[in-house]
Image 1: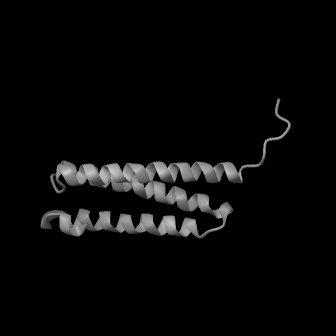
Image 2: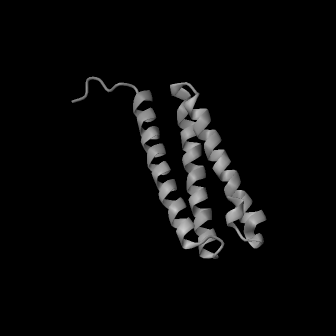
Image 3: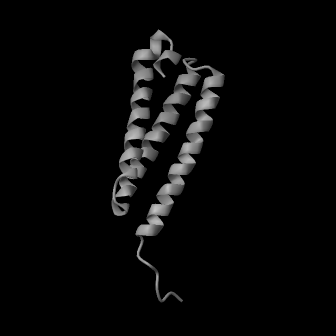
Amino acid sequence: MLKLFPKTTRYSLGIKIDVLFIEIFESISTAAFTAKTEKSPWIRRAIIKLDTLKGLLRLAWEIKSLDNKKYITLSEQLSEIGRQLGGWHNQIIKQNSPAKTGEK
């Protein structure tokens, strides 16, 4: 990812974006191999990091460190990942919530 950035932002914004990609991957991997009751915090962490990443990519695009084509491609893929993480998080919440019995 760093190769996409000009030298002026490569070692500041570019590195932070690379680190966020890795942290998101780590959170998702941890959630995948954690007990059902302990997945939610890791998925939430991945969602928060993903939102931060999307914001930094937008900043990179606005300051012209990332061209339109690359920004659009990344944004579309990250939006899909966000939808999947949101669905996974909602599924985990439903599975971990106590069964509602005796409702009127």
